Amino acid sequence: MKALFIILMVALLGGAVRAEEKALPADDLMSSVEQWAQENLDDSVLEALKQVDRDKVRAFCNDLQQQFQGTNVYALGPLKETATQLIPVLQQFEETEPFAVWLQTHIDYLDTANELQKQVTVTPAEPGSAIPLPERERTVWTKNLVKRPLPPLAQAYSAQLKRIFTAEGVPPELIWVAEVESSFNPKARSPAGAAGLFQLMPVTAHDQGLSSWPWDERYQPDKSAQAAAKYLRSLHKHFGDWRLSLAAYNAGVGRVDNLLKKRKATSFDAIASRLPAETQMFVPKVEATVFRREGRTLAELK
Image (cartoon, rainbow, N blue to C red; front, side, top):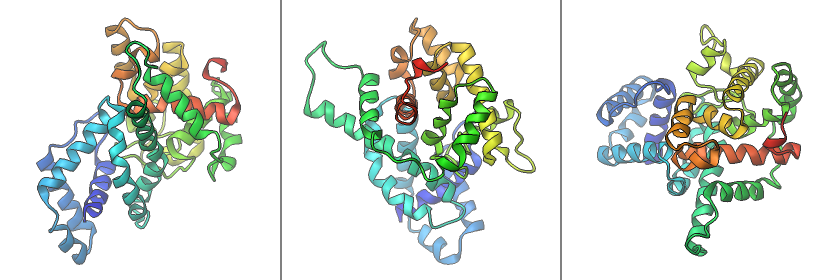
């Protein structure tokens, strides 16, 4: 029953919530979900939906939003069980399959969070000797990705994407951002509204010249890649550092700039703990993926 409502919630958020807009209040969210259900689900499913405990649903919605937008990486781990149960259910419906693709691609964020939590619990460090979290994340991601095979669609897209990135003056090795974001599946769509191989938000896509009407060009691999490359190029021109550029790609330029200024910092590691948990995971995962696929560090990219 809980999984059923999560489907509705994800479908609603994916279609209606944009990064530049505020999240709906819980009561408004419930009303919108119920309206969506009336328009899209048959009578038997609607009857089941009526049995859902509204208070528990509100609590779950709030918790989900807080954990992914918060700064506590360890809080992502407990979401693993629900996410694992949710994926096969989402895969059954055409309308929710894009969210299943996104969630399957991001399930290892939750695994990594659990692994990091175990390290803290099992081997507590002596005061002053703790390894910084970003460094520990890089180590865990490198270990976890060492035997990971290529995503099924990577071979179909990688050569062309590298040509596009090179033409835009961006290191071709950074096409592996698409593995981190979507496993090279152009259908992927996040609950926040990011879409396509490179998970571009609507405003970012528009700023890079993509159209959303009459067709959403974010779902076209070549155009998505060109827009992502342009955006990465502009970010690197702004920050002069690939870790910070990737952090801004995920969390937004303003957020990264503000943290650098507030903390009088010049590096990703210095502000990582204040970034959203997803961004804290995203940057070292991209690093580890580029190294796994190309044998190069971000510092070596030209």
